[in-house]
Image 1: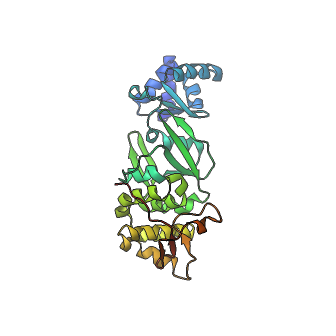
Image 2: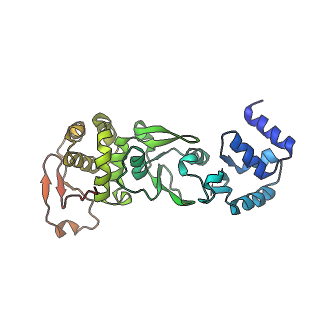
Image 3: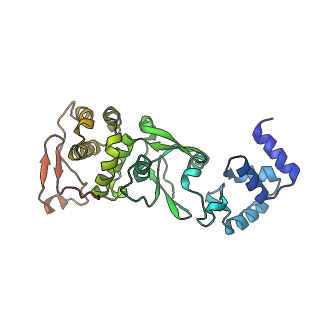
Length: 284
């Protein structure tokens, strides 16, 4: 008999209630469970489970971020109404049966980029998912169809309850430019990159850039040069310019067709073929 079956037998023999189930679960080092698990362990109907779960949610002892998936809220987080997302994000995405990684500004923060305040827990996955209100924060999902193509840029990071997948520094940098509007614009990206740049491996960056729009690579390369890290961008430039000359791009993506004419460029960078309409303002 496996551990899970023993756990079910123990709960059934004890005639346990849902609060006891949640407490026992936490004593086993887990804070997440599914509705089906709880119903099987307690030997109750779905209606009885939902009624009991609603009572615990009202008392902020239970958090229900997705249909059929529950998170026990440890006492120290009851005032928040949910534990921090790193405590359950991996289990949640396994429940959703989706590949994922924690990315963008949150990943940059985990890699030591602390200049920019992160207002949401940003996750990249291959399905359009609605964002989740998670107590004091939001878990927000961003779509990337070909997630498998950037698997080499994803790393595991230990958490208080296990581990989660996050984008490495190179994938994070490319994503910040691909989803620049999410990251807060070029000034925010440049501020984050001042901290992130030293962690970037030039060869890994070049390899991953093959799975991004070429303009992303050009913009990352220009900014690394601008921040004094040209040596980390050399392999990327060789990758981008290996076969043909690159078209010119603006450092900040144009939102309207006529936007190019609104500003006189301060620089036309030949090395990256990037048109700089204004230099990024970096927070100190």
